Image 1 (tube, helix red, strand yellow):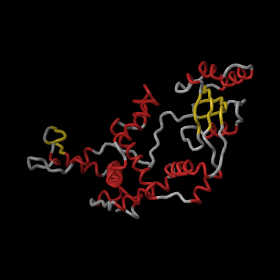
Image 2 (image 1 turned 45 degrees about the horizontal axis):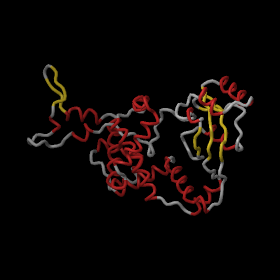
Image 3 (image 1 turned 90 degrees about the vertical axis):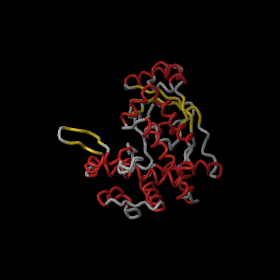
Length: 304
């Protein structure tokens, strides 16, 4: 399938990494001492405390990334946390578990996540979507513009191969009258669909598929298939159109258009940057440590 196998999309372009250490530094313990005096390591003649380590880490760009991550997450959580349930995050998490199966741990590793930080990223994505809908409304003009290029969700069958020669062989067998579903079961390397005849739903806004895959699919007429293998990121595709409901009327599809517009805005770094700036401003985020002031430089016109 023309999916990007191990790439995770972050709506607002940041990855939550571990913040436990920095958030713990300087807190007062129940015994009256500060956590900053906690010994991290010892050596002959001395020791390193959390405070020592904290001051060293402050000089690294990583510390600013961690602080930015933490502030953005906390601001969104405070502003919109009640709108995103634990169940919603877990549902999203399980879609990835199901999607990647035995490769899920590899997916996490390739994107530098633990299970905990991945869940937090999913939560931030959901919080960001809620914030976007709260702060930016879809206008009639937006809907009319989207309608001009709107394409309905279609149903296709596909066979993905890693070799062009195999894909061409499949076309030859289809031309000879062989069943598409049987060939999908025999040749397709997409384990998610091969046993269902290669069938899937395809929307024009679906970013899980290459543009070459979508363009080829939407050009087909019902019952026809691509006579030339379609080159995609992960190999080659043969695609057959099963059904196309037609565009219909503008009034029929306003809810879908609105959903598509928000989906496109969520992928727009400029739009989402403005949302982050607004939330940081509304939450009165301020960095007190002069050494870390630049952590939110990208949003400094509204947060300092």
